[in-house]
Length: 276
Length: 121
Image 1 (cartoon, rainbow over the protein chains, first blue to last red):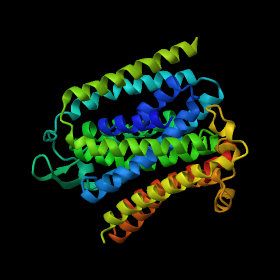
Image 2: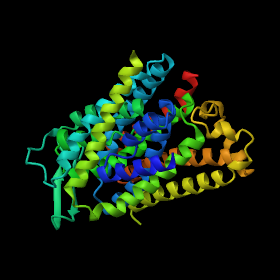
Image 3: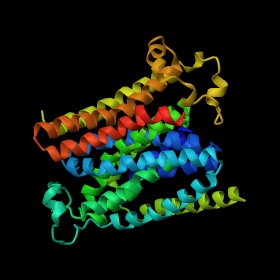
């Protein structure tokens, strides 16, 4: 279990997906852990990796705390709805639905992965009224471009809608759903990818804390399992963050993406088997 | 010290405290009477059968399981503290729109931690 969680934390940090996306399939498919417990351990360990990573980025000023906080209204609301839905599903023995949704979520999260390979800034779009009202602007120093980047966000409302679903998926499946959060900021709000990924990471902690509290009451958190997982994922994420800057190898990324695709398909297959 | 630094350190310290508590908990776990159940993937011991209020006192008395649980509670509490710091920061800047937004986020957290549990049980 410790090895599986270290591996998940490692792959999670290298792909920017967080540990849960890899962890829950490994636990359920290979270690025969009930999906409730896998999701519970995953969600609570997500807080650890998010807080650990966010502490560095907040101080580097790449994270936009204002935009993150504004969007957390939607992620926390979504997380409450998602956790309650998960409770209903487990109580009615419909867990196969969650396997299938999980598989689909993994497969769709491959998209921003392909995009992240490029470090381009978003293309120009006119600011709208939400840019002004919600102060959706900021600047950060870009290490790769070696200059200060000024940016602003648009379509706050569209960001909020996507964040609601990101929060819901997080509560439903016990993952951080960082990929969906990145889509919300990168695609919907036209923010630079670096701001999107770090702000997403920053938001995951609060979203996961909301879901974890409800999981706690539902009894989806097995203390020993959750403890081992939190430590393991942190170790994995730490190793990943040390190795990440040295990795420029596209082929290695492709191997990780292949693992993700494999896990996604396996989850759907398992779901379909359980449904019969 | 800037508020962003304080938020950054809060997050880091929260995680460190939590990890230390969990590790001490594991070191003391051998004393647990129902150890085999605790280590089983289908364990019956989960958070629905544990009273969160009694966890801190049991942890002080060196109960391994309670220490792990306390570590997990610290982990959940860390983002809550972070949101509280956010409210203070936006209020200090007299940014009332974002103060209100952060209060709503805080309310959602309180809803999940203290209010909804009374309705689902």
